[in-house]
Image (tube, rainbow, N blue to C red; front, side, top):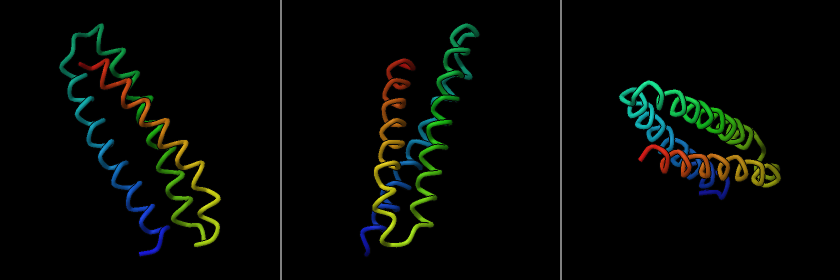
Amino acid sequence: MAMKDAYEKKMQAQLDEWGAEIKKLKAQADKAKADAQLEYFRQIEELRERQHEAKAKLTEIQQASDTAWEDMKAGAEKARDSLADAMRAARSRFK
């Protein structure tokens, strides 16, 4: 398997995992008290925005040639790391 394919699959798996976790957080937010819901929903929206950015970077990599994708890797990793940080923050607030 080519490095590009392996990278795409790894990133897609991580995005899918986080997508499922965002859905769980949304379910928790739906059950929260009204005043807490506003903060939870704000955080969920931020997570979805970062998830969208990371997916867009993955799409760029998928459409790139086998030689050009390496140049795009740094941007994709930055978007992924940003989403990871936001997920950690959301998990700690939702506990």
